[in-house]
Image 1 (cartoon, rainbow, N blue to C red):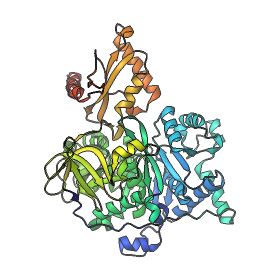
Image 2: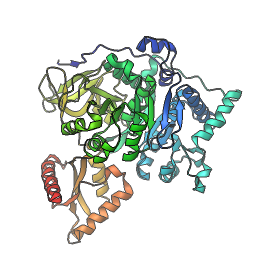
Image 3: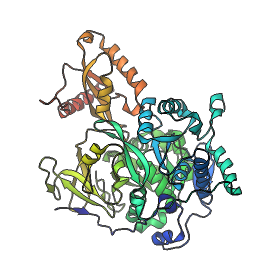
Image 4: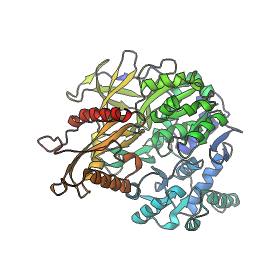
Length: 572
């Protein structure tokens, strides 16, 4: 059996819960940093990049416990009950998550661009009892909460738009922190004791939703140990430069609801005592001015933002020379973008690293070592992990320079899918996670992604299931059948493109009107990244097997050729 292992030595992973890992006894720090003094005292933990409000590391634990008191005392959340968080990034987002974990609750983080229907699915599937949201998302939040039976009394806000009278009915997190912090100080409430040991590997901390090829998103059960393991593993990769990484200033533009932001920008950053500047969305002037103002040292990004940094002329108007590392994940990074970025005056000395992982691995599996960055490589295996490559046709394991599906085994491999035994059994086998990605390893242990068995489309690093879009297309009155495939896009990575068979009764209708109708229908039902930005093409039929299964591969090449031709004409 050919099993690829990390070239780095295994790291120690403490048997604790996340709260006691982030706010640990000094013994945990001494294990990793060789000192009994947490390297956080007097440092800023989070800065609101819009308002400038700062939250210090020194008071962070108390704030989390104040919020835990509100969840326990006001909302009556019991152990293993679920807090839903439906919001763009906010400096108080980590406090909400750790407050829930402090008393043994579970947090489910939802994409704040979801429609009501999408949020209803996640809230219902996860069983959320309380919903924390944001003024920009409150309309969808209220509709979804009402649909699943979450009462208005169990809805709270990160902040309030004071011009909206209706929002005054909902408390803000700051109001709750003030009220319940005072009650804790008076001894009016005692937080229930919650600590984990070896059982941390089996207790769910987060439910993050990952799109499946069969349609609706699935709740990935992420344990306390999964998160802690990945923090320790990434620290292990950077052991030689860890003392420098402790000084990092980060800019959080990646969404916290996504596993990439959740692990790297919340848990790894806070464990190290970093300062994180939090932005609610990618706004180019604010993004660039924040780098300059706060002298950001490390950027965790997705390829579309790296392309912006590499190509947009406005970038040169800002001082970005403080950025020593740009880390790319969630989707393949074109190597040409790396070359372009390195030519910019503010990034000449920047190291560009790439990583690969997924929600089901609580994120990172491979990382490019800073001293050995290779063209198109997703890096080498991080500590404590094993990979094997399995030929998807013969099911035989293959070795170096042979393509196979990547199977992963290690402490960050998650527990499975909530309420979905079938999907769990198909994806998790004998301790191995079947990733659905086809990869190859070279003789030096670098891995490269070649293809995907999974049919998922990656739009700006976010997963889109073709089956979900096809199911919605069938609800449109003009559509008889469809097949959705991806087309390459320089900025988004990939975009969904639909090949649509019209019903006989609509075949003579104006096609532009039908396209507009379909796009309007999608706009009302699905989040922005699931829109058919790759176009709609009408066809007489879509290719299927004898059993009726869609044969997407026959349309993928056609789609790429058509898309390239369309873009060429657009530039002429």
